[in-house]
Length: 57
Image 1 (cartoon, rainbow, N blue to C red):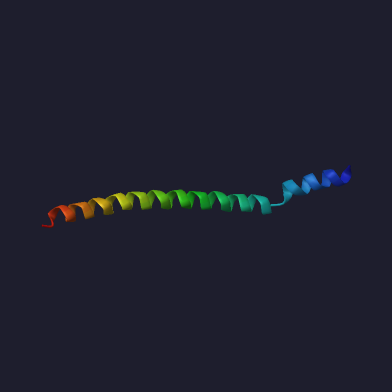
Image 2 (cartoon, rainbow, N blue to C red; image 1 turned 60 degrees about the vertical axis):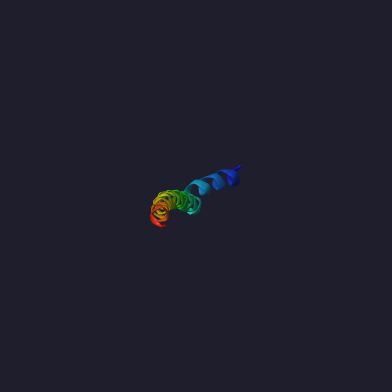
């Protein structure tokens, strides 16, 4: 029984799992921001190409 209690205590004391979780959250935020920026930039580039195409003979 003491071994189980010691394992539970060490699980809550260790910071390896928390660090991995923090990195996962940061990576998810970076991906979301990058996708938003790419989407916004893609829309602007598409509009620019459409304007150039409409001005060409």
